[in-house]
Length: 448
Image 1 (tube, rainbow, N blue to C red):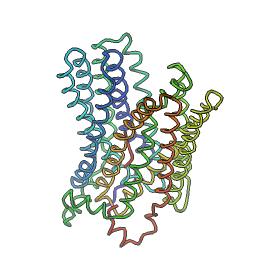
Image 2: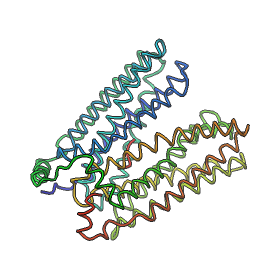
Image 3: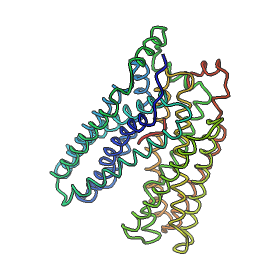
Image 4: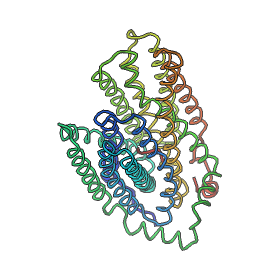
């Protein structure tokens, strides 16, 4: 039995899970990063390694997705994942405080905490996107992708507004209080958001699939998905595009300070331009996608191409700005980079939902997990490669500007490669039913 498609209210309600994930992820990846380096004077490599490890743990996403496929329900995996993530976030705050006095014990505890955060966001995020892919009508998927991505960013913003005031003046006790409050509230929000999100018809339909013998092993499912040409090419596209996307994230503000001599407030404002452009791009694609008729899959594919190509142009502009200097229109360039990133991100997520839902829901979670794992691997490599690449080139060239020229140019080339890969992705709607079943067979996101 096919479950009823979600309306706009249902999509927004499930998007609250992404808001909760965004808030807890901001705590662990932003606040604790700063506290370790600034307040507790730990080497910057410590939080960088912990955040990278969180992404490595998220390589388990295919396994969580397969579990929700076999179990027949997504919400228990979302709830369990959010619970583990909330406990991990609170433990991470405690571990951060412990590292100031006992680096070894605190470091081991932080390793466990970030493992929990990575596992929790992997289980919850993958199952959430799989649920959306199976419950959202095709014509609403672009807008659903935009809504869930924007609501994740809203989680970052809400967290920043609350924690900014609650952590002043800073103390370990205040940090523990904020971590407990944010984690507890986020878990409750997610719990309410998924309440009755799956009706009894979902379980009935899943039980029918299992009775028919559709319960293969995890290895067999992944091998089946990887054997599908479109799924394999989309996995490669996700990894390459997110490699370019993540490599720029950690170097934009240092670039503004080192090359353009901006103050921390000025570089933060520049980041605001970039995020504003990203939101506009997401809203643009989401709004147009909700109203677009005809071949939506092809439409989303070409928006993905345009977003990747636009990102490459913007990064080439930043590379040129490193040579030109203050005369370059930096703020408009950064705004355009955000706009192109937003277009690319939402279009790719919309395509992902369409591909994940092709051929029915029996492999949706595993497909989402595979693509989410590719994204996690890209983030683990990209952020580290971008930051260390700039540092290594600055030391080798004994100049700052040329170092950023090379790194931004390299990122632009990776985005061009992503555009080519996106253009070569096929249209699942052009397949025959037999092909769809044989591929059956055939995530981005999340987030973070």
